Length: 112
Image (cartoon, rainbow, N blue to C red; front, side):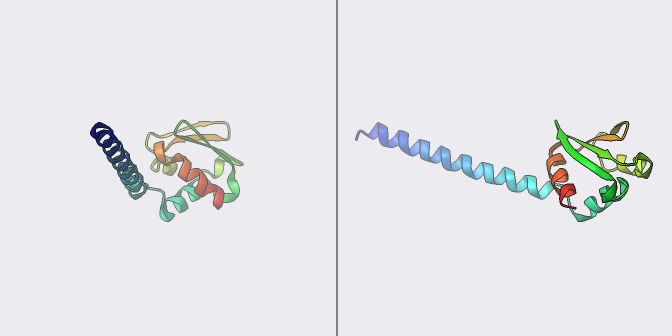
């Protein structure tokens, strides 16, 4: 086997190893910076009027789309303090921008 193939193979192996380390680092950093913790979820559930007031939860392009039974039970002003860019209300549907955490929040709400 010529020396060029050994060098090429070694470089490819190093690139793959470095890429794997970078991916693990990015994932761990993302997990460390997420705001989805128990106090956040408790506040979100409370501001949405309680778990019995939540009908459906969906994620659309970083936005959490939550349909509630009774919009009067939702504390919209306090809910705004939890989001990155505010909320949008149409009927009994609330859309809130949570960016990268939207899927985690959806999963946590569904477990409640």
